[in-house]
Length: 235
Ligand SMILES: CC(C)NC(=O)[C@H](Cc1c[nH]c2ccccc12)NC(=O)[C@H](CCCC/N=C(/NCCC(=O)O)S[C@H]1O[C@H](COP(=O)(O)OP(=O)(O)OC[C@H]2O[C@@H](n3cnc4c(N)ncnc43)[C@H](O)[C@@H]2O)[C@@H](O)[C@H]1O)NC(=O)OCc1ccccc1
Image (cartoon, rainbow, N blue to C red; front, side, top):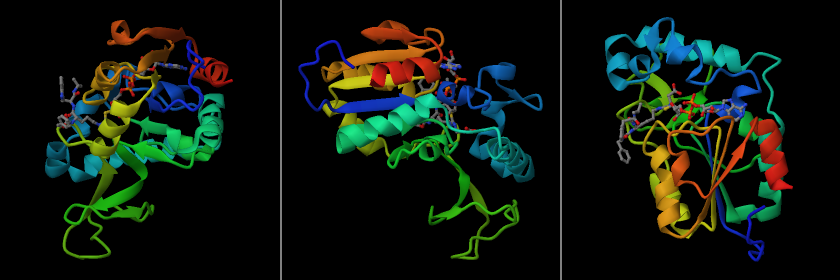
């Protein structure tokens, strides 16, 4: 826990990225050089790609869902340690993830802000209402509510506004501690959270296998596999 252990119930904001799920068997974006079937991820994860070729985008996310639902893909000690921290801190802890997998929840976390959406739900392109994913869904599935438009993956694509930005900015402004776990700091606005936390006086920690693109902005670096360094930090 933080250097100055004067804080009894510190307000903590945790930001996680693909690195926290790497040891659970999920590829990070940097693996395979960010390519999927020779498509740059930034190419298939855009509203334009969905407009032009919805079945390609559905195939991309079906492949990610299939990977997530493999038996050997399970939450690891880092996910479980954050769930334990949530029990200790309650509302003083906010877990924000860039990940679209459900490993935080399967690791026991009750409150997780998926700022880039979720794999296991679909969304109506008009009402933005979310529906639990069904394998019968494809690029022709109509919204069960308005029956007017097709459902789209419940994912925040490049060029789209991430979710929960007001709640996140409010929490960053009140944070005593900000820790970024398993993220390379290349994608904004998430990569900018450390700067906002710092400006509001928070103590900032980067926990990663290797220093990320914004490492210099952090007060402290914890280096190693998340399943090791996160439980050590929590205990
Ligand atoms: C590529 C980048 C330059 N582009 C952007 O950032 C763009 C454009 C942009 C906006 N502002 C900018 C400013 C400057 C430059 C560019 C921009 N951003 C956007 O379009 C965003 C939307 C971005 C979201 C796109 N969707 C995703 N995901 C869902 C899809 C899907 O999943 O398919 S992004 C996706 O990529 C990112 C991948 O990054 P990481 O998770 O960090 O993963 P990565 O593989 O890179 O790194 C893994 C790390 O883990 C470490 N690691 C590996 N193993 C382990 C291990 N075992 N233990 C510990 N660590 C480990 C590695 O060392 C490494 O450091 C994640 O965010 C992930 O969610 N929208 C937006 O800006 O809207 C307007 C706006 C403006 C202001 C305020 C609000 C809104």
